[in-house]
Figure 1: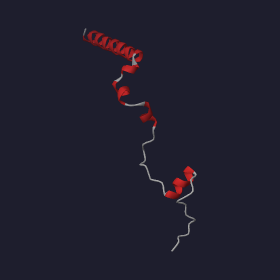
Figure 2: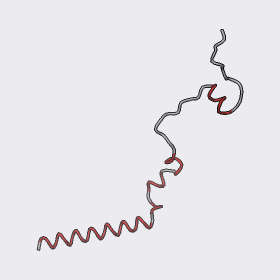
Figure 3: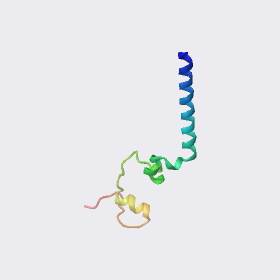
Figure 4: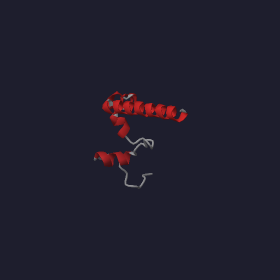
Length: 75
């Protein structure tokens, strides 16, 4: 008798969880987490801090002449 009541309770719980899972799968856009995180923010790499470019690196990337140095410092 005790075993059958436990089996009924577990069966009922499994059916309830299955129903909740089906509801969640049919309405994934209503998830609170997806509303808080923008798709762009989740795809960005954020493991390292931004390191500023030197003037030489910046001029090389932009293709603009200017702050480039030849490696020899004028005195």
